[in-house]
Length: 438
Image (cartoon, rainbow, N blue to C red; front, side, top):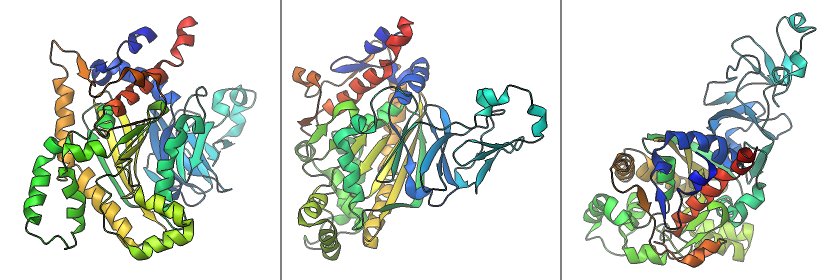
């Protein structure tokens, strides 16, 4: 595929099914799109001590996020410079003061630079020190830590971190500032689910407010039956508090509003959301006001967006305090991770909300997620049907939106999705013009 072929797949109000089905396109995404965008790596609380690490894969490349001796964080290529053996095959752990390859025992400092090789005299007079194998593991140069959220970009070109994310970083601020001391910790493990669908399908569904009424009808009906007849002033159990709002009507979701930002980012639920009705905790709210001031505390408490998308890999929920990480594996396979946060200095109730919500809504065996998983995997197959090769994104399209920029919309507007695909096309082809010219 050439640049013009890829751009033709994204039209102003629809996208071609190849964006979901093509293995060739997915391979190009790894090289161009994911390597040219800022992707979420992990949270600093996952590597509290020097030598602590986690392993991830971004743009098809195995990486290590590791805490340095000076307290900093680096993202390294997870491969020995000798034969390519990963320095760690574990999900997380501590490497101590250095990395040691399990194959031939080459060792590296925590910053990835070479430390020692066995039978060193065998390399005297060779070109080892001058070539890539003598330079160490290799560290990514484009790494940013924002409120303890770690992001990385593989390629050198393109916008810097703040230019790329812009105002959508306020969603991370809203999450972190729910702690009276401004600090979060990842706790409670992770829920992982491999879905046999394209990653874009999952990501656009995060901004889809029309599907809950039909896709999750059985879950909300069951909750309503269990709760019917209860007095209005009776406190809802946490599960009811979180499930019942999924059954709100189209008007509710439309009025919640949305906002799109440049580069594919978005915020759904700028006016209110299904999380806005959670029970208040007066002593916690008082602590927030004491810590952040009346104005900032009110802003944090009153803003509970449905989903904020830091395109393309992170979805943030300020309340409950949870994130989803989208990690593409193939054209038809996507790993979804759901993580919970404990806000330091906040009541246990807030952490319980995060854990309960992730289990209730994002676990593949939950009363909500199994609906979505079935739909995603069915759509992945249904798109292969003949005659119609296009996916409709027409709802509420306006020609003026093609001007780009930040824009407020109604909550059921598919601009929230169109904005993602336009960014995809731009970053996918950003470096192709030079390559094709060469």
